[in-house]
Amino acid sequence: MYFIANWKIQLGVSESVKLAKKIKDGLKKIKKGTQVVLCPSFDSLEAVGHAINKSDIHLGAQDMFYESKGQFTGEESPLNLKEIGCKYVILGHSERRKLGETNEDVNKKLAAALQNKLIPIVCVGETLKQRRAGQTKGVILKQINAIFQNVKISRADKIIVAYEPVWAIGTGISAKPENAKEAKDFIIKLLIKIFKKNKIKKFAVIYGGSVNSKNVFKFLDEGEMEGALVGGASLKAEEFLKIVRSVTDYK
Ligand code: PGA
Image (cartoon, rainbow, N blue to C red; front, side, top):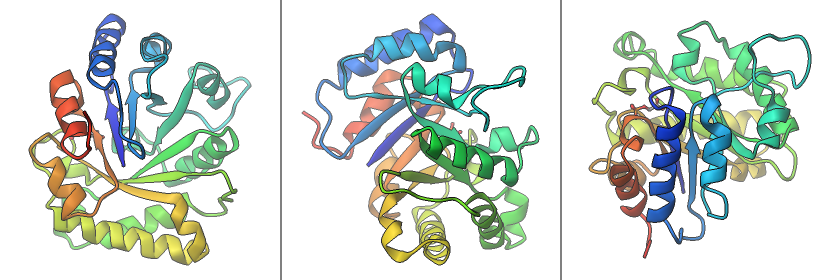
């Protein structure tokens, strides 16, 4: 079960450290099989990494570039992310896609993440217009096929796919658990087509989009999701802790 906090650029460095410490204090023991990941802004990564040192909480980046070294002004190197302690990386978030990121970019980033032993959290999902036009499955199909094209999965790899309907992100209007379940089943079906059936164990499908402590359980239970990608509700320690605790035997 994955609980991934995406702080976007909502917090400064010291605010991020403070929040990370509160979350760490609230999660002294994390149930086996539950992964808690904090994804602060790039400039806060190192400081948050120090703050969660010697805990079971992991560090993740919100994006990265597909080259590790070279003349790429302003990009983030997967190699450097690894060096400062990142274990996870979010790829293809709709807020990046809105700024011009394509499925082809995400495909290259995915290959680079796996090569650098970062666990990718690949985001897919439709806009409201696409949902209303009945194009949800068509959009997911196009995204999954393009992103996973020619991607080799090795023995050690683990990949998370986050179903994040764009219309549910930051809006307070979450999808219904049955929408999430339908998307998950469809995503798994597509992945089975691309990869061998035994490789499917390497994938976890999680939900993101206005998740909070009141609705998270429905997504995990009725929606059969394997975790949540949490934006707004991860900015308050108590709320995020409630989300994690709502489904674990945390003591
Ligand atoms: P939200 O964001 O929880 O604020 O909707 C989710 C996300 O951007 O991944």
